[in-house]
Image (cartoon, rainbow, N blue to C red; front, side, top):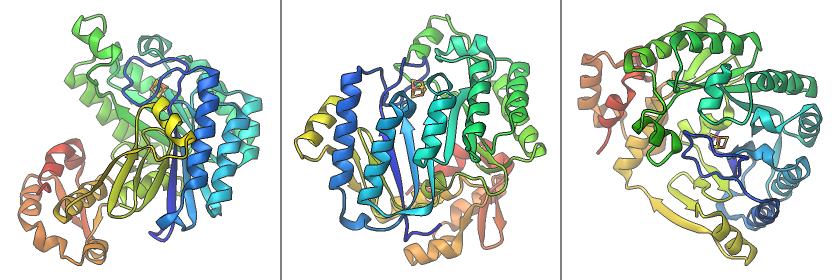
Amino acid sequence: MSTKTLGVYIHIPFCRAKCGYCAFVSRPGSREEQQQYVAALCREISAAGGDFAVPVDTVFFGGGTPTILSVAELTVILDTLRSRFVVTSTAEISLEANPGTVDAESLAQLRQAGFNRLSLGVQSFDDRILRAIGRIHCADEARQAVAAARTAGFDNLSLDLMYGLPGQTVDSWRETLRRAVELAPDHISAYGLKLEEGTALAAQVITRQAILPGEAAEEAMYDYLNAYLPRQGFHRYEISNYARPGKECRHNLKYWRYFPYRGFGAAAHSFDGRARFANTEDVSFYCTRQLAGQSAETFRETLPEPDQLAEYAFLALRTTEGLMTGDFRERFGQNFDDIYAGPVAELIRDGLLIRERDGWRLTEKGFKLSNQAYVKFLP
Ligand code: SF4
């Protein structure tokens, strides 16, 4: 992976129903609206250019629920991307899928269309919890989707799981992990629930209609996760991501390694190595602008250098590989150890950071208290 290549993110902002905890830019949409969105998206991709004329070696369709679109629509989007960019023959092409929106036939067609990595939003294998958080699928559908994906030829399969969910116990979480591993995925992402203001779940927690596990239980889930998955052959390569060797998500590694990426679609963000920019989150406005041949960009900033250095540091420290001081010097022409001598000394003293070969990485305690570590790098 190098900075001479580009990652592309495609945002599909539709879902069949809104999950209780979800604060992503996603919502149900009519077929007509979805068709219009696909047309707008293809238009944006076709018109793209400029500094992004470099080979694309990772593509990620995220959402929302990309698989709410038809196979034909997803194929058109991917083909449009291929006609505008040089997508390499070995590119990782990921597709997020909700188990309730795929079947053996659609997965076979998607694999045929060129998608070669599938990320299934399973979240839990406990049906009671899935209902409590408003997922549209049950545990058995997730199991069936994994089997169908394997039959379709997906040899790079990831499962998304969540802990700290309403009604979840440590035992239920252990069982979810056991069942996930039993399905032999190549990659697992496991996120602790972040209760987002304005979500249905946040309101239920306030009125005590939903009860979250306490801090101690959530910590026990986190500890079990980080003891269990490595024993099962999944190495942790980022705070919340675990993979079989060689199955790390190459697209997401670009974010953590501060490499450029280009986003298409409503709410999609881009980074060209210096500037960040993003499209409007308003799906209708996005469509209107794109279909009129106008930009839907509503945000652009170039971070001052001290902020860039800090951002680079805390993104790199999310990975278990850590921060390479040589790479830092190459990118910014400055010596990391000189600039951050103070924060580094404090983090070492507190047991959050250790030296690793040509750089630094967070300790296990550092991962657990990562937010405390990151603020030390802020200008
Ligand atoms: S499927 Fe994902 S994006 Fe859609 S509502 Fe649920 S959590 Fe949000």
